[in-house]
Length: 221
Image 1 (cartoon, one colour):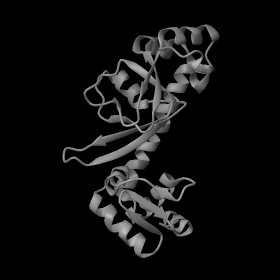
Image 2 (tube, one colour):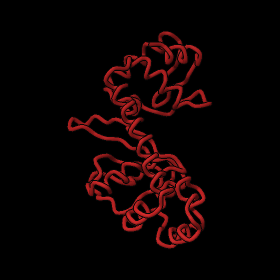
Image 3 (cartoon, rainbow, N blue to C red):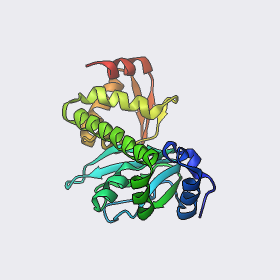
Image 4 (cartoon, rainbow, N blue to C red):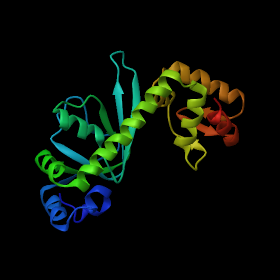
């Protein structure tokens, strides 16, 4: 499936010459995934650069003991830098990308990617700027897991997951994966939050009762 003028949705591609953009549209193709489907995983060797046209992909990694940690999310208008890294290194994925919503992905063949990186400064800058930003994000994840207080990190993540809403549909295990810790740790801290009337809980759902208190917790050091 091809999508006309998808290059206009991405900063790095809409800055390219018209002739190059036309070529991109000709050689690329779109792929759709339903919510919950695997977009890529450790069994795959990437042969295309992924541009996310619609939706959100959650990128996570699992340890040998089965513990998960969410590394980052790819949102519409972004490329997947893990795919970029694995293509440059010619290695299989070392993480898993799951469609967090229904998604539409534009796949650009590796041969075209290699040529554009070599010949088009605007495209090369886009690729490596995105790579740099994501590396900084990953270093922040490492810093949080290694040194951050779990109550502070949990308060901040609850506010992020809730957005403008008051309810979060997530299990303790899913939140543990978000923060790279054990489910038992999350359950203990959530129970403390509930005792302090910051949240209430039911099966698979958390309701924010005191957003100001959570904000204060998230801002504490």
